[in-house]
Length: 423
Image (cartoon, rainbow, N blue to C red; front, side, top):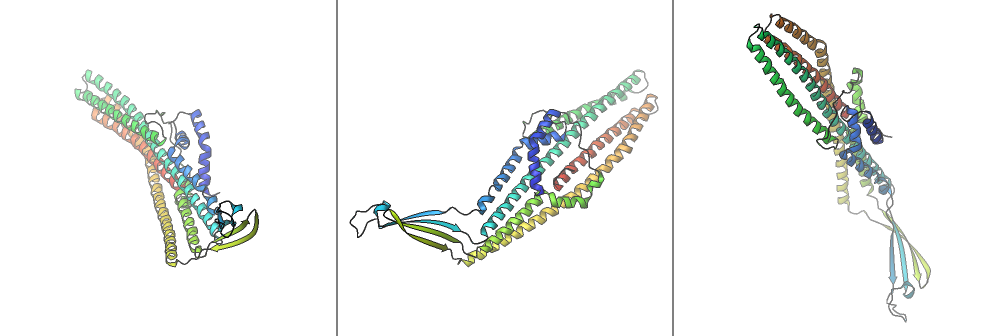
């Protein structure tokens, strides 16, 4: 079995099972796996593509079948001319009746070409359906990453708000003791108000992220989603080799598979058009009834004469151009996919390095700076503005950390869409 039909069949076979496991194991929204399972089972967009692919597969057998035979009945001498009888339409009461059964028979090889072209068209439809699912899955993955990013940023913002409240308490206590000016307490209140305003904006962003996910899952826009718990683990760097992923994309990318199938269909159509230079036939057999018995039999062979050469040459040129267009479209799709693959790998690696730098260097340094500034403020060695600046450095570092993680997950989703499977 080709990889794309196998992938599509696997997605369909696992839909109900995966959806059941997701419902039984964790609430919807806690992880990306549950969202994908729900989408496979309920997405009307994916269902439409799947049904179209199944409909295309049903066209294969009719394409290679013989046309239905025809039955022709000829009533001869219904006026009974030359006989002592009145006109009649009943076969036993007229001169004779000729029954002809005619079976059209195309020239050798045409039925096979029609069937092979239909098979290629069915494979193209399967590739389109698999590509549609890959697009849906990538959009869901990216939407979940955005949902996770907002939720995690909210968590960081609440932690910062608690920290600012603590700083405000320290500033108010020192101000009450006459150790710092009133400006420090006011700055703490301003910072608290700013954090509360940011939390309101984050709540709106989270609401928008939930609406996008529900739309992709064919759920009501206000349907609740659970708190996102985790991101998918990233593949090992060895699996993100461009040369290996390029070969995988050429073999498994649904769009490339569909374009290759379109090329095969165009090739078979071109061969069929050239085969139309030869005549088609019709075979017939005719029993002739006289009174109540069949006394004669006739055999008939009929063929069309391909004389309209100008029209036929135009059809042949059309088939050639369609084939060239299919090949050009395949090359364009491959070039765009590989360019996106290269760009995605580079961006993912850049985000990975930023995350590592932030986690191992920037964030620890910001935390140490804040601890030193807070200790210095409590002893009167530094001013309150220095403490707030150190707190903002921690906040920016944590935001950069979650931003780089989200960027990696987004690029991974795009890479998986291109290579045709999860990594």
